[in-house]
Length: 195
Image (cartoon, rainbow, N blue to C red; front, side, top):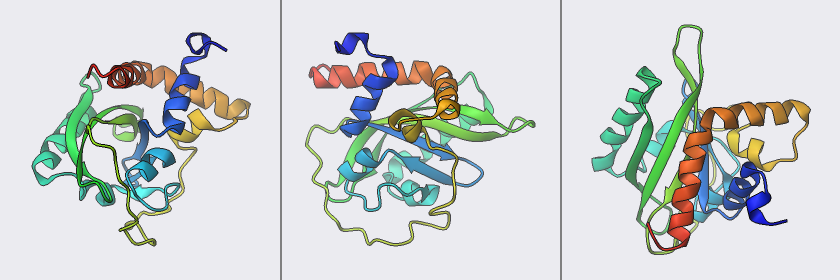
C-alpha cells in the first residue's frame, strides 16, 4: 500500500516503531509519564515499557531549560487555548544532552476543570546520533514507577486493538490531531534535512 493512502495513525505508528517520534502520556495527578518504548530505548534508558515518575524525567532536563518547560506546561494547564510547545535539552543515557522539541495537549480534565491527562510528542533535533549506554541501574524509577495506567497513548497507536480501544484511539487522535500533524511534518522535514 502506498504510504500516502495509509490512515494517518499508521504513518505515525511507523515513526514510533522506528523510534524517530517519541510519544508520551502524562497523568498529572499520579505524577506518572509513559513514553513510547522505542524512543526511550533510543535514548538509552532501561525498562522501556514501564511508566516513570515525572521527577525521573524532570531531573534529566537541563537546569536552564526546566523552568521554561514547566512554565509552558502550566500555562497550557490553566488555559486550554494555550498550546504546549517547547524546546529543551534532555540528558540521554550515553549521548549527553540532546535538543528536544515537545508538543502536548491536555485531553482529560476533572469536572472541576483540573488537568488530569496530557499526551504529546517529542522529536530529537540533535544532529549527532544517540549512543545509548546502559549506565542507569535497573530497578525503581521513582515513587510512582509502575503505577497502573489505562492504555497509554503509544499503545493505542501501536497495538492491535479491540473495538473499545479503537474508539478510545479515535477519540484521543481527534483531540490531538493538530499536534500529531505538526510533529509528523517536522519529522518529515528532519528526514529531508530541512529542519
